Image 1 (cartoon, one colour):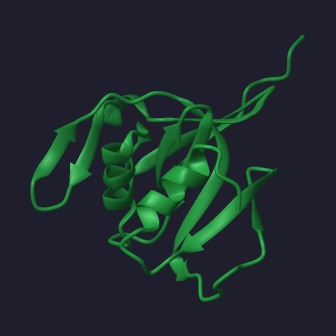
Image 2: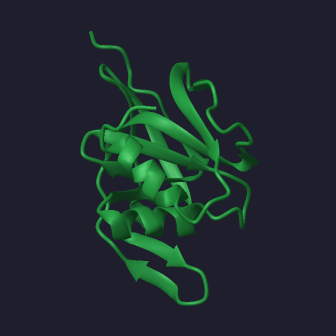
Length: 141
């Protein structure tokens, strides 16, 4: 008999570029939806906004939107926008609560639901969404 799937939902947003899923973490008002919208404008797919469900599968943690929040994202000051969502494998996380101060930082990790995931901190630059998009597209750092 196969092991039971475990699932939990967390306060975050998520996008994907190809097979690379990015979990966007931060306090309320930290800019999770804004960063997700910026990445979508560059070509990323929306996985979930405001709540991200994590389900353990053989390949790792699959992120998805809870049914009530599928196909929508908040655009503060405009309202709720319709945007297709799709599941994605969690491969990287960004922490919007902490700024990166090193010019060439060491690679960091975080453990999420028992999985070791690459962690990136907020970079105070207008180019931050573009930097993330290139990284998610396979650019190495």
